[in-house]
Length: 295
View (cartoon, one colour):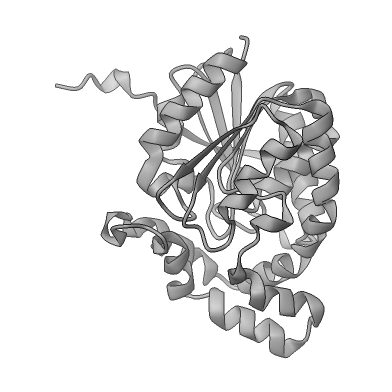
């Protein structure tokens, strides 16, 4: 019989930072080294539901919901501008309010440009970097970005509608979870069903379309992110679902170009690698962090 106390409890909490009611998940000893987990589109900290307890025996694990995602609430009178700069500023305020002075940074998808901006602001706070399909290189961008590239080139109502119709619906969300997975039935339906349901809230799709348009700002910062990897050389693990149509394996391999000590691991799965390979990712993180972090 499994001892119920052997699995660390995960708490759900709220905190006011940057004028926003931020939802986050937390587990692990308060005095342990911190792992800060930043999610991507169209998900939330829910994507880390299985990873958090697997890390929380040795680490204080914190996973917030970004503004515009999950269960974080942005008051209407806040007049929030949904851009990657703004998301990073909010995460900076969150980190300050939480008193996080050092953390291993786990980034995925949108969490990468948010987390890398945070790293540029506080380079000495990053004890390690784990990038799971979190891109910082042009060669990592797949053909799946083509409709969004056209939207960048000509941000017309027609191109906005093409992106809306292609991505911001149940099938578009489900595709991101099941594409590249050898057995799509292995993916728990509550994952993409929750994301799709939250996308249907009033105003939500306009928020996402604004962020799609602003994603081009991240490409302009890629050289700056890469300089950070070269200059600071944080211990880096790039662990990647190699069948991801959005962020390709060359984006993982490229971390070695700027940090030759980076560890690159490719998994036979898709974009949301945690849905199928949480055990492998947790084991790789434990081994990597034990080797690179000092309490």
